[in-house]
Length: 201
Image 1 (tube, helix red, strand yellow):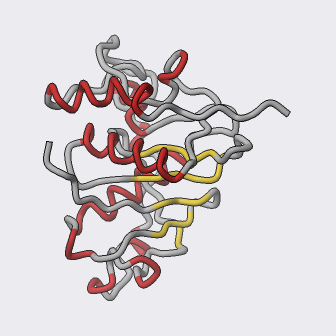
Image 2: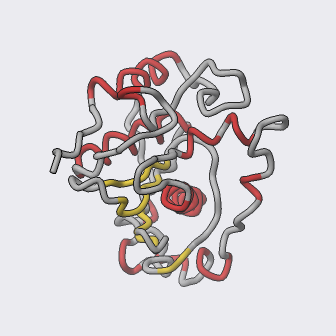
């Protein structure tokens, strides 16, 4: 699988977004999608329960219990299109930095961030490849940052907020597969990059 060059904004617990280094290294449109993913993971995860953007995919399909959810919180266009565009994707120079971008996204790439005490800190969003690859990059980045003390999620056991396949079509286990290699990597994430456990007090 080729390496993904993605936007990776983080949204803190107040949904303030900040981004990476150089807009020319990424698809410009992925900047907003990544911000949506960070915002979604942050806005709909709880201190004791994480929801990844991938967990929403099946739920929002026609007939799903959250159909229309993705339309419920629009992007703040006054923030995401704030200029100059030459500063987009350039970390703290990005006009979207320290702003609330809004928006909801319902496919892979957005994860909640929890510290070693289990405190929900915010959300991470990655965009720039398939939704499966975005999820893989986001999961691995969260693990490298040490912000994967996820208390619980839609999946049982170590799956927690991982992307899941093969559900009813209308549930949190119903994200579509991408290619076979990405599907295998996603399914192995809880083993290769396991979620950490908060130490008992």
